[in-house]
Every structure is written in C-alpha cells, then in structure tokens.
Image (cartoon, rainbow, N blue to C red; front, side):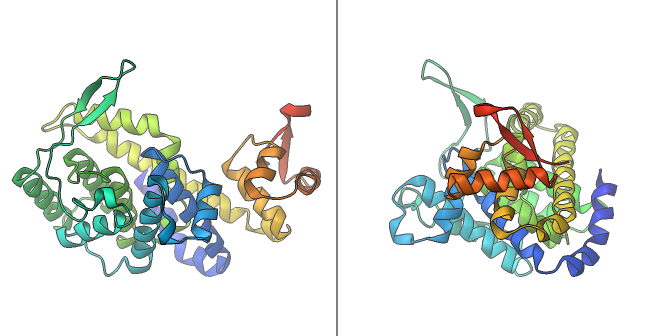
Length: 329
C-alpha cells in the first residue's frame, strides 16, 4: 500500500507542472469538502453546497450557531496549514495554537481553547433510553495527558527507520486515544493528518479531501479505532494503520481520476463543469437536487444533463421521477 502511494508521490511534481492552473479548482473543491466533511463527522448539518455558500460570504460577526462557528474555525486552520505547513511544527506550542485557532469563534469553548483538557472526556454513546455508555476511557487530564502528548510528539519527531506514513498513522491514533483537548479532538486529528502529510512531502493531499473519505467510511473508522483502543495498553495497531493507508490509497486514486478528467472538463462550459463535479461527489443525484443545491434553473439543468448524457460524459439511470445520474466510468 505504501509502495503504491509513494510511486504516485514520486510522479506528482511532473503532474503538478503539467496540470498547472487546473489544480487550483481542485484545491478549492477539496477545501470545501474537507471543511464540510470534518465538521459533519462531529455532528454539523451543513452540506457541501451550504459550506460553499457560507465561506463565499463569510462574516465573522454573524456566526450565530455552532455549525457555522465550527465550519469557520476549521476553514481558518486548514488555510493556515496549507499556506504555512513548512513553518508549523508538530510540537506542543503549535498544536495548542492550532486548537486555539480552531475554537476561536465559539464563546462556549473560550475557557478551554488552546489548552489541554481539564476534565475527563471519555468517549460515550447515547443509548435509545437517553442514558450514556462509556465506549472508551481516554487518558486522564493533567500531567498524564501532558506526559502522553510529550511522548508521542517526541517519538514522532525523532529520526528513525519507520516510514513517514506509518509515523503519521501512529501519531493520529495516539492523539485520538489520548483525546488531549476538552473538545475538537476529531477535527484536530484530521488537521494534524493534513499538516503531517504536507510536511512529509505529500503535497497532493491539499487537492483531494482526506476528511471526505473518513466521513464516507465513518462506521469503519470508528470500529477500527475502538477495536484497537479496546486492547490498550500495548495494543496491536496494524488494523488502524491498514485502514489509514487504505484511505490514503483511495484519495490518491480519486485525484488521479480527477486529473484524468481534465480533458473532459476542458470540453465543457463552466456550468456544465459545475454540474459534472457535483455529480462526481453525489452519485445518484436527481436533476431537482442539482438545481436546488447549485441554484441553477431547473430547465437549464435538464438541458445540460441531456447534453452531457449524449456526449457520454455522464450516465442516466431510471425513468420518470426515479431518474438519477452518475459519472461515466
């Protein structure tokens, strides 16, 4: 798995020079997907089109609900990481600083942002009767959390023969298991993933959403994580590392597919491209859904869908109200 990822990484510099400006559009789309997916994993209800509209008109004086506060915070940190990955260190000071930035728009989180947790934050499940059941006991607050974080950060930054991708997978696993912050641990783990991958030279991750893949496989993500954590201490984390590498492989293949579609996109109008990209991330969508989410008149959407089908760019499935569309493979 590592070999396939690294072979693609070795060819990335050539791909980047060849694709040029088209990558900027991929990065914009990836940012929207990453922000939307990572906050939805934690309970946000904002769709990708919601996130796109919100970020286009971002006004920090009007962040009236928690979903918007979390989206704005995640977007801020992601942009800082992408623009300044070389200057940020996986060190306590910078990790705390990123958490403070992540929580900057939430008054509810003002008391703990930028600091390690002060109270226990065991991972719990809400049962149908309203009661809660502890799924996993995280590291206790105070010096134990400090010590565990210091240890994993030192291990990560110490040169060794361990492959960088394995080190990143273990760093993320330990971070999630320690759960060092009162809130925002899931979002921080995904931001640390992006930061670490960029710092290790995997530049292409900014053009495809790792967070979107985690959201898509959320059930497996939690199952693998909990299965490994249940064996703590001295657990075997092979299952987690395999899941992590599999996720990277999937997004690697996604960006390859997107790049391979560049020639197709060049033959489409801007609106057709927008519809095409929407279908690519919402397989099985219907014309009414496309019109509503993209705010394009329904007759225009239907006409463009018909044209894209005739040109074998997308596929039409079903009839009547059941008609839906997918990308032509």
